[in-house]
Image (cartoon, rainbow, N blue to C red; front, side):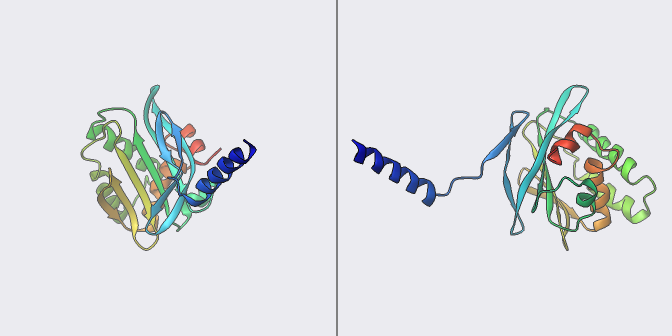
Length: 191
C-alpha cells in the first residue's frame, strides 16, 4: 500500500512539473482577467484590477498589464514601456454616444488645452468606439514603444494612434490626479 501511494505521489508530482497549464485568471465583477498577456513578443503581468462603476452600476472590469509590477501612477503614465489596459464590459448595451462621451470627459480633464495635433489624435481615438459596447466585449488598449497606442476590440484591431504624449494623456484618464474612477485606479495599481 505504501509503495502504491508513493507511486501515485511521484506520478502526480511529475505531471505537475512536466505539463504546462494555462495562465491562471483573476475574477473581478464575475469577469475573468488572465494573469498574463502577450503583447508584441513581451509577457505582461496583471498588475491589478478593479471595477469601473457609475451610479452603482458595474460598467467594466479593468486590468492593468505591465512587464514589472508598479503602484506608481506617475511612473506608469510617463513610462515608454509596453503596457495594456483591458476593459471587459459587464454592463450591456452601452451606446456609442455614452461611450464616446465618457472618453471626451476624460480627455477634457487630462488635456484641457490640447493643441491641434493632440485634438486630432483624441478625435481619432474616440471614433474607434463608434459601435458602443455590449456585455462581454473586451477592449485592449495598449502602448507599444515605437508603435503607438493600439485599440483592439474582441481580438480585432480598431487602429493605432502614435505619440508618447497621447499615451500619457490617455493613461492619465485612469491613473492621473483626477481619474475616471478612484477605486478602479487603486485596484489597477494593485493597492
